[in-house]
Length: 317
Image (spheres, rainbow, N blue to C red):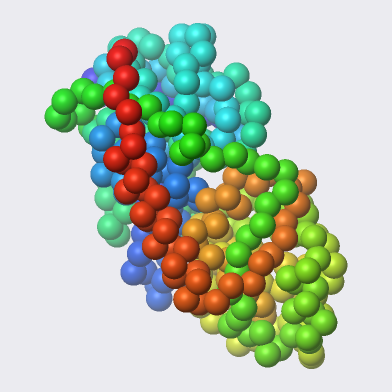
């Protein structure tokens, strides 16, 4: 049987891919992975299309038992993976056999890890995506997080069984202090000059109130000219809402489709993988960039992935 059995689900393990696009008007959020760099890199290490679904693991890893032989790769947060209780490296292809067990010793940095399987996960494509939307209970594995004794079906690997490793220069660090580049707007005219200055100069800290929906930050108050409420409008991943408290909230993959709080800025898409790996206590500074600069950063992000694919080095089992 081409499947992996969940012995222990970890804190939050879900099926995610590049996201579910085209249904915001129906109230269905995009969902998808939080860290698109680690997601795409994991798939490249097992010769999958970059957008293929993976398991996204948050803070505490699962224990998985393989019901078939395959190849996997683990990227993202440093969770110390083990195969049959023996440490195995991240950011490289790992061959596994039927009966093998994958587990994790504990997190040493970052927040989310990604497990890719050669051939991909054999779950239904719903509205163009395999991603799990937890609130709508749609997609992924029965529309929910994984739980004990689930049997997650895998597709059979195709093509040559190659093994790859990423060089150190391609493996991200997860520092306790990060800088996020952000484009001002779309409601910057509703903030005072002092409020905008605070946003781009003050230090903010990730609070424990953070999840796939968004990151609540704490720091210097961002002041409005009048109030924080607006007529609800669309929200993209990385939008920075500022409610009446003056404390920013960065909306992420499972964000609502519309919102009625003023948005002071939008984090550049290329920087969202860094934010996705931030734990509570991470310090954040915002750096203002133009729309054109954010677009160039996104082009560089995809160029980096193309370079990653070229730079993978073959390794022996």
